[in-house]
Length: 156
Image (cartoon, rainbow, N blue to C red; front, side, top):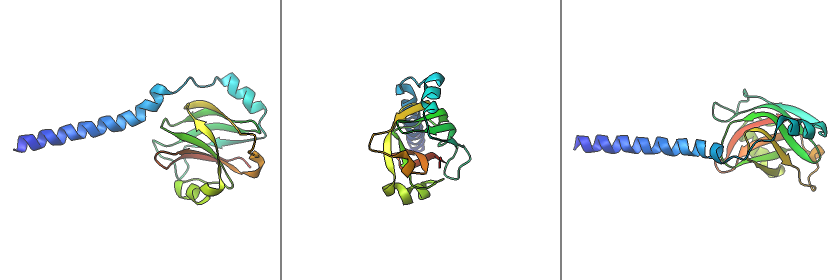
């Protein structure tokens, strides 16, 4: 009986670890090719604002972080840097600076989602024509599926 309990426990643990590893690895495996540094530099040249994603934000941790220069323009937002891999990332513009999940949830209803992020080294997200980036102050990377704060930066 103890042997069956032990086998059940070890198999359940292995299954759980495999599931967690799959959630982490799948977005990496299916991610499209990241934009080149030249492409990001070209988009950043048209940007009106820039800011920096930092790993040391209060809401970031070892699995949820971003680092690099984010450029915000009328037509696109770009990142020359990296964000932690994960599923269902969305890019938001927020009306004020945020540094954690709780802070973002307080302003999420006043924020605008501008698009999906599908690459983890560099990205370019097109800004919808209806969005005026000058009306917002911060850019936020958010995992929609798990309501998880990834990173943010104040650009104005």
